[in-house]
Length: 279
Length: 279
Image (cartoon, rainbow over all chains, first blue to last red; front, side, top):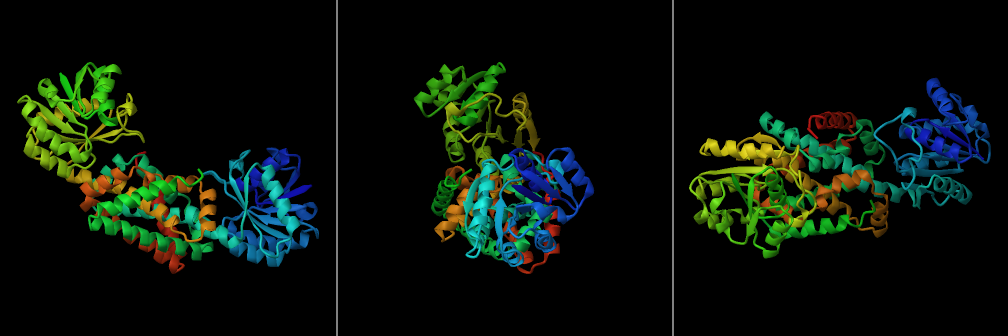
């Protein structure tokens, strides 16, 4: 079986590398000549090209571009595809992507391998990036069954934990656990650094330790990624952030009203609830 | 020099252990007989007792009880103290403690060694807990200079990073970097688990990874500690949490209004600002 990878960055490059070492013939496409050369030189792909025509012999094609480029890439890809080709993507928001791509190529399955590092680009590609990581497959009522099974089979071969749900459920779940935390965390940094007394700011910077470090980590991440999440998953992010605001207000009310029993109860609930997350 | 440690938990026990191995004569007081025996058996202290009268020969006494017990402990301690004895504490909020204790014992210096683990009690005591950690000393205009210098000298002997500021500045700074993150993080857990669709909750629990894990960590911590922070540092916590709420609203407004440039700018600022924290 031939695998096509369009977009040889951290995700595409890492996926290509693993799949090639599993014995697949892997063909890569990048918009940069240098990336193609590197991918071949490092043994990440069997062949690479800047032209999408290289995908003519691919049986399953992974679109690994930034989310904003997925639809336009598939539009350009379609004329090169063999009739039975399965197309899948790795975008972190699913409903808008799945809707757009299903119209462009009926044999399309949405996917989201939830793995990454702080790095990006072909130089950041690593082996075994997806091992024990969630890989969500998001078919709709019209997605061909065979395509779903094939993509799931490949995801399992990467030793990922494969989940299946509809695009809308995926987007709602990741709003809670991935997109909301970015805004919550960024607001913390923004608030702290709005303190007007420079002596306090300096002291806070000196005294900050693991608690602040962890709570502020994702809010100090890649700004482009944050905007992308908000743009493509806006409705679900707004739903979760508005709910968050209500819960924050309940904490404020307890503290303002010195209702220590209510605060204790809330913190007992959050301590217990956190134990139900699988990390 | 004789050092007294009242309260042989994680902080008191760890401090006693380090100071004893530095050559000080270390005397410990605990409300539990078993803790006294353990502290002696493990070589954490030279002697231990349930009676505060053991502190009669101590030159510097560290009050290492929970914050709510500090003032009542010192009230009971005062009749046993030698005239020149220096008293200090390790409470995580300083203004109310410093005010109460300065009235009980003029030769008092407030202190806050910012170290800890998730454990508590004498069994959690470890060596070198304070190495490279901040240790804030909070004198007021009336604190005897000699007492400040002596406590700072001991803190430095633990190889802590010693800072000096007034109690109010301490409380404002720790509200930002320690107490606010707890409420921000707990509100995140509370909001996520308020999702009414059990399928989404289950999916979120399965998909949650390092981003959610880190952002939710301190909100899933010890509820008693969270209530204590809010109770003793209420005014500063409310100031910081209300500022946080305003910044959160700005993020919500940008997302609601699809003002992606404003969101990008905010996220660029938080990415940059986080780099100024020393962790």
